[in-house]
Length: 425
Image 1 (cartoon, rainbow, N blue to C red):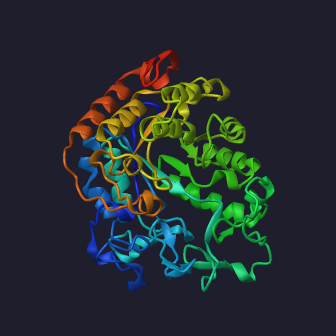
Image 2 (spheres, helix red, strand yellow):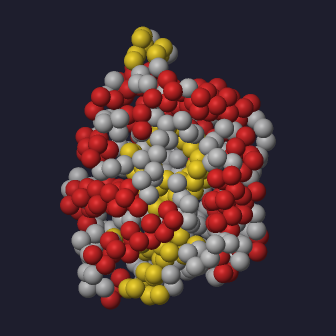
Image 3 (cartoon, rainbow, N blue to C red):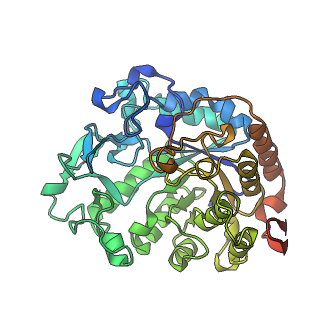
């Protein structure tokens, strides 16, 4: 597995980053798109051309890897959930794992990404690799698209219909309804998440399809996978999946989203040690945000307590650390204090683990509507200036890149006071 510990990851919600090609904004259904960018549930125009045009900017802040939200072909229709009309701007409602979504490409023919070598995705990979940058692709193996309301959940293989949820008979999907007891592991792993059709991992046809698709993305030049909703599938599936990916492309770094996982969640620790991938370190994030944004009583003692549990992990230096992401309120929506936010980000750059910067962190980007909860934690990127925080991040990214001690050493707490912690790397 490729060593990512010297890298700094920049996480981009593609639709909310930069509109490099306005011609693709409306996709196949104009109702999906909001040109005013006020409806947070609709597409706003960001695309792969926009990422290409801002590679200089991303590299300037020191990022050596870019994590993109899923680029797979999404459902075209607008669906209604809880009285709210929603579109698949975020990328997590895939209907075809072997095509690019039409909102992200330059030309209609680009969607058939595996039948061509001249798509906008190929251009992005080529230009990133020429700069020594790595592409982390966000992938989803747990579920397909919704089957609620008028949505039927159809699954395709490069444009060829494979199945429909309501005509499936268990060959591709579980049909047990939604999760009702989040403490029941069987329910969590076999029932639907938020009305999304849950794949049946015991189906050989499904496993063959999903693994074939992901191997093709690796063949396209993808360097790493961020894997969504890993706790919703049994560990044997992930062991098979990561084993197959490792054989296909041995240098593939993989890390999973075990939501709210980390040092205080034994099942997630077990997963990190046995699944063949690392995980996002929610425990680290929660302790830092509590100490610096929420003024928790424990303060930095809680941060130190997380690090003191590193011995539980096979290798805690592989954990992916972060302050903000697309599922939680941004730090600045919790506490709009630039100095504390700067400290939180800069700490993350020099502690054990692989640091991940959420798009716009360096610009103090946030929207506080509804407390900054999803989807308001995904505003449009509005500035690409060379801010002081951007330059600070770049300096520490360079330090991480050249320092084996920062990359590979563990951490030991020297002293913790009421407000500050002094640590040795």
